[in-house]
Image (cartoon, rainbow, N blue to C red; front, side):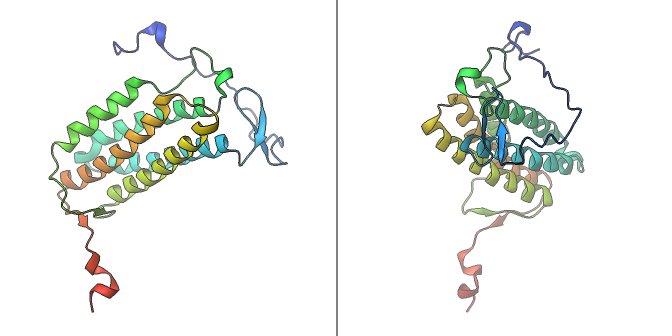
Length: 210
């Protein structure tokens, strides 16, 4: 048990029972928030936590890929934790501020700090960049870059939502750090697998080869 999360500060356990998958309540293009309010399925809040859900799916894919090589297995555990954190983030994004419960799952400064430590730790092993990198070299590297780009989209949507419906500041901080983490993790993967990074060379374009 982390000292930052003593038992009395733990989040409430989920209280759901998914007996039926389809309810037909969304057939007219609306869905319910955690507080029961019905909103359009393209509402800014739905778009934001839907993108977080999309990110979690890609993280799950990268998690499985990380397990395939002993050198990257430790990253799999980190990515699995991130999936739980993304679901916690989705819990808050699906809830209007006035409906948030004190014990409701959420992102805290603890999660932000953990990402920062992991970024710093893995970045120490990497050579300084002299150019931008392109996704590739290994499948896991490319998958982590997909995670990075989806994470940045989620961050942009959260910033937009925050203009009209104030979000906890840790939510946006977390997405910002997570985007950085995916970038460092993608580089770290190629480093430990001893695969050269693909560096951007503007003259590799068709016009630069003439």
